[in-house]
Amino acid sequence: MENKQINFFKSKDFNNVLKPFKKGTVVNIENLEVRQRKEELNVGLYGWYAICPSKELKNNQIHYFSLFNEPLLIYRDNNNNIRCIKNICPHRGASFYGGSIKNGELICPYHGARFSSEGSCQNLDRITCSHIIDNNYDNYAKRIHLSQYKAIEIDEYIFIYFSDKSEANLNDLIESSSISNYELINNGFSVEESASEEVLVDFKCDWSRIIENHLDILHIFWVHGDTIPDKDVNKNVLVSFNQKINITTKYIESIYYYKNNPSKEFIRIKYIPPGRILIYKGDPELSRYVQVLDHIPLGENKARVIVRHYRKFLKNKLLNNLILFKEIQKKIFYKIFDEDYMILKTQTYNHKLGLIKKDEIKLLGEDRIINYFWSWYKKSEEKDNPWKFLNNNKELDVYDEIIFKYPPEIKKLEIINNINIIRKTFIRYAAPLIFLLIII
Ligand code: FES
Ligand SMILES: [Fe+2]
Image (cartoon, rainbow, N blue to C red):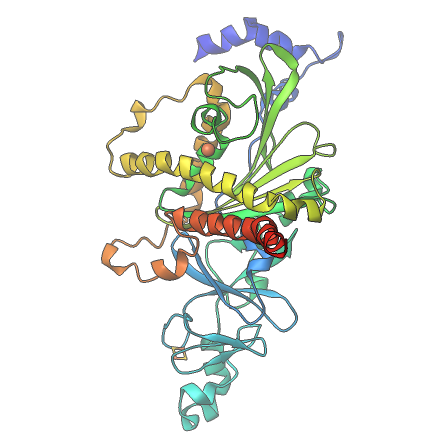
């Protein structure tokens, strides 16, 4: 230890630390420590998660999902506020699945208890005999109350603040990180003028593995080389990069420059924990394209990804419709996810079954952002312990059908999109042509 210290004071690093201090100034050791201390992410696994795009949540509809295995639901109340409720009726523990929303109130399918937007039961007499509650109304009303998490709508996404536990009173939930970290405008992007496409896909694999995959720049050349329409992303060309990494309390950003042309940027990846990744090029204000990837830990080996990209080119609606740009973009997304899924499934399987020991995995120097991600993840998991609800009885996956909305085997979504492409191509091109031929 002592040797290490002596070496440090003799080293180049020590000179670098001293450099910014002018000659003749007194350098005190506290300053040195401040300069050496690196910034660290201060967000853990509890925090804001983008759960679904706003347009997925229609009025009077319930959107079911889960976070870290905990069954939840969201809906819009009469004032268009989003409510995120623990999907367990406080009366006798039924799921709200099969229930409904009427006049902004959530109705349980078992005995018909109605809950106001604030979460209090509006018809206690319906679920217990009135002679019991007559003298004790307040006491019962307190007990039969929904448990909630905070929810907010921003940039046309619905965000949930997931924390240690839901509460009857939202004021009792304290946020440890600000929603503003996720707002695109606060990350330098103005997207109002952009066109956008998005897809949602569920994976039967580990949530953290998907994040690792999306932070991994090198696999895209090999796995997606034939799919991504960029001449630089190619299986047969070996491109090498210099990586610059910025770590702050709110995000980690990795910028890749071409090794043979160090001033030319290839791409930037910004990880805003726990679940968001932004991929773009250059200064965000000038960026013509940004891809927003949100990762939702539905449960053990169940994860959802929402990918939306905003682009400032090819925005003309008519042209978009004519060349089926949206559908073709979606086709590319599905193909990319399918290519990743092939790897992610087996990788998760190998890890979960313990077929691979931790020290058999080699993270190399170029994986600095991945390295950082894993040390953050491990620390956050220990600190927050979010996997409280582990389902050890695999027979009891009663929520799977409800929760896997965007089929984990992807193919189904891909096929639906392909049929859509054929249908639209026929209506736009073949049908008018046939019609013309008949007339002639
Ligand atoms: S369990 Fe919901 S009303 Fe009884
Ligand atoms: Fe990938």
